Length: 96
Image (cartoon, rainbow, N blue to C red):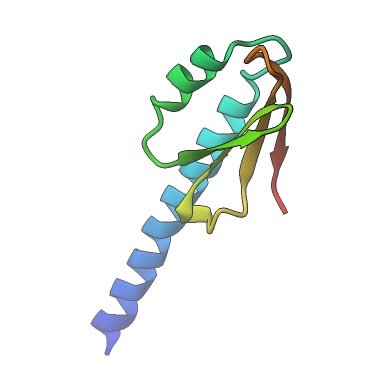
C-alpha cells in the first residue's frame, strides 16, 4: 500500500513539473509575438516546442493561431491574430 501511495505521489510530482514547463513554454513564446512579426517567423518558433502544440484557424480577416498544451488541459494558451498580410496584429496569453 505504501508503495502505491509513493508511486502516485511521484507520478503527480512528475506531471506537475511537466505541466509547469509546458505553461512556461507557452508563456515565453507568446511574448515573442509582437505586432508586425511575420507568419513564417511565428510558425518557425512554434515548431521548436516540445510540450505544446498549435492550431491554425483561417478567418475572414486573416488567421489565428492558438498555442496550448494538453498537459495544462489546453486552459493555458496564447492566441495570435494575423491580418491579411500575414503579420501579427495581436498576441495575448490566457491563464485562468
